[in-house]
Length: 167
Image (cartoon, rainbow, N blue to C red; front, side, top):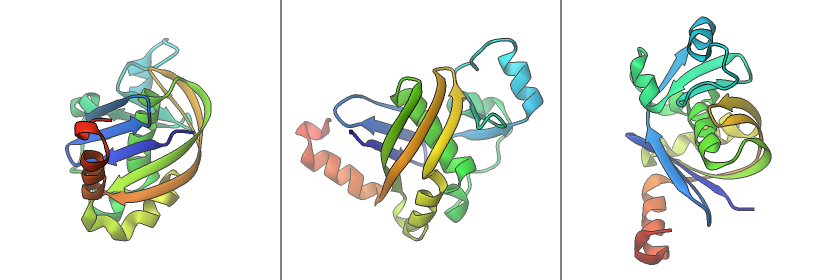
């Protein structure tokens, strides 16, 4: 089963599925209220692009859509590696990387070198079952394994171990 590589960069959040495809979106995440969610989604079955509902009760705008909402400064340290921040970005990436439905995912997840002390927080924040809805559909994902790595090491390996630095 191909791993999902997830790079939680400072400007862009990037993902890559081995042997398949890759994508990215702006590193911006804004929680929104249930009433705002209902206003945005209306009677549609799926939310518009850039919005995500996790477990049916936590609502977020992600990427460019988050810039339309008031956002706090990006969290730092351990606050970056929680279900409601790192996990939300990962869920949005999985909705872009995979077709809707049920699946098992093995994750290769990055962190900034200064955040090595929080590698276990990443594992704890994302491991297990996730249910979420985006414009791409309804997802039930079980993250079975999580391996973490320093972002510079990932970039070096990408450049050295692939043809011309391309997957």
